[in-house]
Structures are given as C-alpha cells and as structure tokens.
Amino acid sequence: MSSLTTVTCIEDLRRMAQRRVPRMFYDYVESGSWTESTFRSNVDDFQRLKFKQRVAVDIQSRSLRSSMIGTEVAMPVALAPTGLTGMLCGDGEILAARAAERFGVPFTLSTMSICSIEDIATHTSRPFWFQLYVMRDRDFMRRLIDRAKAAGCSALMLTLDLQVMGQRHKDIKNGLAAPPKPTLRNLLNLATKPQWCLSMSRTPRRSFGNIVGHAKGVSDVSSLASWTTEQFDPALCWQDIEWIKQAWGGKLVVKGIMDAEDARHAADCGADALIVSNHGGRQLDGAPSSIAALPHIVQAVRGDIEIWLDGGIRSGQDVLRAVALGAQGTLIGRAFLYGLGAAGQAGVERALQIIAKELDVSMAFCGRTDIGGVGRSILLNPQIFDDLTKI
Ligand code: GLV
Image (tube, rainbow, N blue to C red; front, side, top):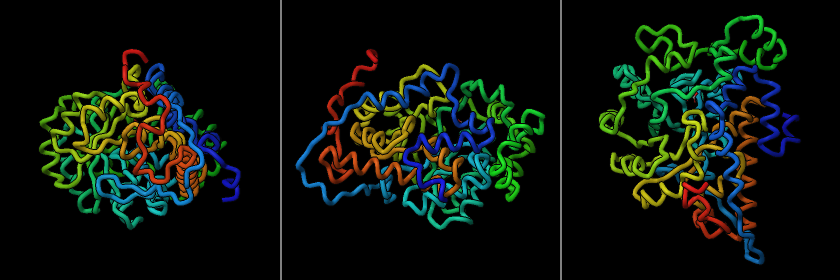
C-alpha cells in the first residue's frame, strides 16, 4: 500500500489508525484504567534504560532468531491477545494472524475476539496460540479448550489479571459495543470513516465469534464490561490452574504476573512461561510498569520457566531493553493494532518490519550480533529498577 512507504515508526501507524478507526474502537485500544498512570509509565519507563554504545566490533552478520516455548521465532516478539481486534478493521484477527505468519512470529487469539478460533484455523496454516479467561461457566471453558485443541493451537495463554475489570472512562463515555449501536453520535463518526465502513460491510464477523452462539444463554455480548462482570470468575485461585492444565494437556502460559511470589506460583504450577504484564495499564492503575517489574521476577524465577513481557513496547529498542533485562520473549498489543487500524494486514506487517529493523540496528550499535547473547551488560543502568520502592 503506497501510503505505507512513508511510515517509518510505530507512532506514524498510530496516527493513521486514529484517523481511520471509529472513535470508540480507537479509544478502546488507546485506554488505560482510571488516571492511566500505569498505561503511560509502561511506555515512559523503557526510555529510562540507557544503552552502552560499542564500536569497532565485527557486526556484519546478525541474527534476531530465537524461540518462545519451543516455537522458532524470527525475533523474540509475539502478537498479544487483544479484545475486539476485528473491530479495528473487518476480519482484523485473520489479517493480523496472516501478517504474523508471513513474518514468522506467533499470533495469539483472544477469547474476546471478533473472528473465531475456527476462522483463524481456516485462514492460516501455522499453529496459533489461544488466550483464555477463567469463567464461572466451566463447561463453556472446557468447550473453548476443546475448540482450541481441534484448531491445532500450540499453546494456551491463561490471563489471570482480569477477574474484575479496571474502569476505562472512555469506553463508558463512548458506549463501547460490538457492533456499535446506531446512535446519532456513532453514525456521524462512522460517516467520517469510509474505509472502515467498507471493510466491515465485506465481512459477516461483527460480534464476539468465540462466544455468541457458543456460551449458553448468551445472545448479546455487546457490552464487554457487563459481560465480563457477569461471566469472569473472581474466585479464581492457583488450584484452578491444575484442572485447566490437565484439560488442555499442552504448553501453558500464564499472563498477568507482576509480583515475585506470584511468579513462583506460576513456576510451581507447571506453566511453561509467564508473562510479566499489567494488561497494558488497563487493569490496576498505579501498578509499576511491566519493565520495572521484570528484574524482580527474573530473580525470583531463576530460569525455572520462560519469562516474557508485554506492556509499553513501541519499538525494537524496547524489545532489546526487555531482552537485556531477562525477558526471553515479548508481546506487542497496541503496536500491531495501530498497524491493523492503519492499513490491515499490510499495516501489521509494516509494524513488525519497523520493530525488527530497530531491534537489529540497535543491537548492532551495542556491539552484539546475536539476540540470544544479549544481557544486562548492554545497558548502562540495568540496576535502575532494582529497588522498586524508589521509582
Ligand atoms: C481485555 O482484555 C481488555 O483489556 O479490554
């Protein structure tokens, strides 16, 4: 797409997405909870880590290739599970999954997606990962697990930090719903988004594909917040992970770990990886940034399981900083969603290219040629988050 030739950074994609995506869905992506302080510090804290520049080191041949729980990846980045992705453009999850497949990084489908598990399996050829919430309706959960198995998903990602929901003011004010309600305000806004309207008119997928028609007695999930409040199980505890692990029987990743003791629980419950995550600053406002929480968790786990990180990654430099502090993998949410909203599959591919290039060149400036060998020594101040009470 010609308009992508002048897109040089993730921020360019964000601005394009803001112009093209209806306001309520752009705001859904761009929100944190309450004051949005954690949402902002996720991004800002990355900038506090400074690189050590090295010169006259042979950096001719470089590799970003790595692995995440046994999956070979072109760089240590996966697409995070994000709700309502198919509302940023028609068939959004299918397009993002295809972009990830072309690039050679994993795609994770959210339970709260618009395209269903089966849609992704039909339209892609590489195994993808499926994200699950712990819901009160255990039969429905089991059926989702069975559907993910039947679709050939190669990992289950269990999100542990959304048993209650952090309030996002904009979603309430905008009356967030999928599909959007035909109010005058929405119709006026949609009238300014012709490309979005065209892409949505070409797909039948406009509601929650994993849920509507699958969960008993659920015909309308249009209000995400109220559905979540009714369905997600606030009684979730570590024992629940055992039956889920058994029912799934494959690779398990737990998401939403911000505390060293919880990280030990995650390792002890037999997960293959944990994700240091504050849900993109969308849940507990006032929690530290993910990058600030990472070193404590690395120390607590001591290599027993893989540690990944999401939250605030907007560049390949951020990926490099996370890897330097001990993350074996990272996940991007907003960074790929901006690409999707801006230009569909091509936009997601552009986001991945941008991140890979920034990662590769920054690694070279640090005098390194293999992402696998990157550690704290590429940073001038790796200890900056060691005392979290001082940040
Ligand atoms: C769902 O995961 C959300 O953050 O809205």
